[in-house]
Length: 564
Image (cartoon, rainbow, N blue to C red; front, side):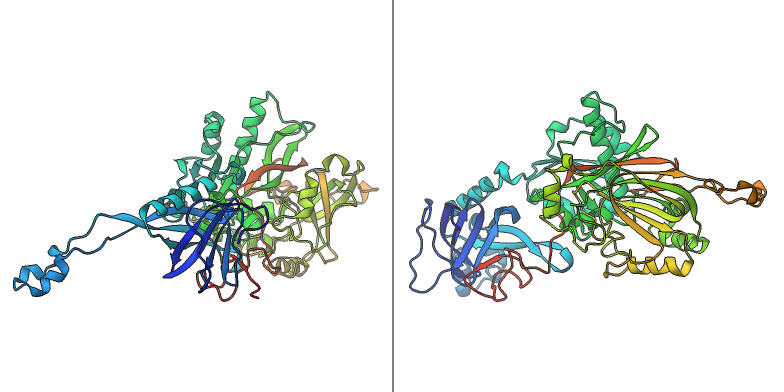
C-alpha cells in the first residue's frame, strides 16, 4: 500500500463498516485496504519496510488532508440485569433503571478528512475505525497525531482571530461560532479571538501584539478586513526593521500566514484563492496548513506612501460606484447593485494619462487563457526570476477613460464567476492593467455582461486595452491638456453646472481620494492559508474510484488497483 520511499510507521487490522481492513500509517499517507479472503493479515504494531500491496478499493489519504483524529467512546456491554428481568414479576424491574452499563472505554477512533464537493467546496468526511482493544485504539490516535505534528506539514497550532461584526450581512460572529469554531476545536488549535469594535481596530492590535506566540492571523469578514490585516502586518515588519515605505524601498514580507473566513459582501480574495466563498472550505484550508503566496501592490501619491493592496485598484466607474454606495450602507451588499446601476446610466468618463512598465515578453499576457491554478508553474518560476524580468521603458496612453483598473488576482465573485481579469496570476509579480476608453452605454454593457459569464472574452472589445505590468501610474488631465489650439475650445460652463473633473479610487473596497497615483507590484509578498484554485477538469492524484464503499463518489481519495 505504501509508495516507494514512504516508510510504514504503524499498521494493524481494523474494522470499517463491519468489514476487516488492513490499515497502514506511513510518513505521508494513511491507507486502508479491504482484507481479502485467504490473504494473511498483518500483525499489529511495529513498522515494516515491506508494505502490503493494495487492490481495487484501497484508500490512500495524504496526511496533508487529514483534518483531525479523535477517540470515540461507546457504551460497554449490558449487565446481567437485562436478561434477568424477563423472569421477574416486579414491574419496576422492567424499568430501564435496572439496565447497568459498563464503564466507558474507547473502542474506536475517527479520522476526519477532506471531502471535495462540486464547485471547489470542501467538507469534513468522518471515517471511523474499530479496534480490538483500548490500548490499540489509543496507540493509533497517538501515532496519527504525532504524524500530523510534523513541522513539514506547517499546520498551525495557535491563531489570532479577528471577527468583524459589521461587514457584509453582519454574519461573521455566527459564521465563526457555528462553522469555524467547532472545526478549530476538533483540530486542537488554540485561538485568541478578538471582535473588532471600529475601523482600524485589528491593525491597532497587530502593532502591539506578541506575534511570535501565534502561527497565523485570521480574519472573519470581507476583503476590507483582510486588507487591514495585510497593511498591519507589513507595517509591523517595516517598523521592526526601522524602515519607511518609499517608492524605492522593497517592503518586508510578514512571517505569518493570513487566513480569511469569508463573511463579506463580495469575498473576492477567497473566491480567487480557493474558488469559493465558503467558510468551512476556508477553515479546512487553514487547519491543514495550506499555503500560497500572493502579490501585493504598494500605492503612492507622489513619494508619499498610502497603503498596500492585494486585489483591485480601480478609478472611474468602479470608484464612483463605491463612493455612491457608501451613502447606502444600510442596504447591505445590494447597495453595490444600486450604485452600479446609477453610475452605469451616468456613463461618466475622465481625462487621464496612464503610464506603465510592461512585463517582459517571456511572461504570460492577460488574454492567453492560462488560468492560475493550484501549483501554478508560472507563479513558481516568478519567485526565482524577478531580478531578470521587466524592461525599463515606459509606455503611455492618454485619453478619456470610463474606467482604469488594475487586478493583482482574478477577483472572482458571485456576479463574476471567473473574474474581471480571469487569467491574472496570484504570484507572478504582475498586475493586469485594464483601460476602458470612453464608449456608449450599450458598448460598456457588453463588457459588463461578458464579465458575468465564464467565456473569458471581456477584453475582446475595441474600446478596451489590457496590459500585464509591473509598475504603473495615473495622472489627471483637464479637457484642454494636449490640445494644439486652446483658443478653439468653447468657454467653460458656469462653475455650479460643472461635473467633477476627477473620480476616486476603489482600493480593495476602500476609497482613496488622491487622483494621481503610482503603483508598484511586489512578487509573493504575503502568504495565505490557501492552495490556489484546484483544476477540477483534469485528473488529480486524489481522485476516488466510483465503487468506493467508504467515501462518497465525489470524495477525492486515491484509489489503487486500476479502477476507472
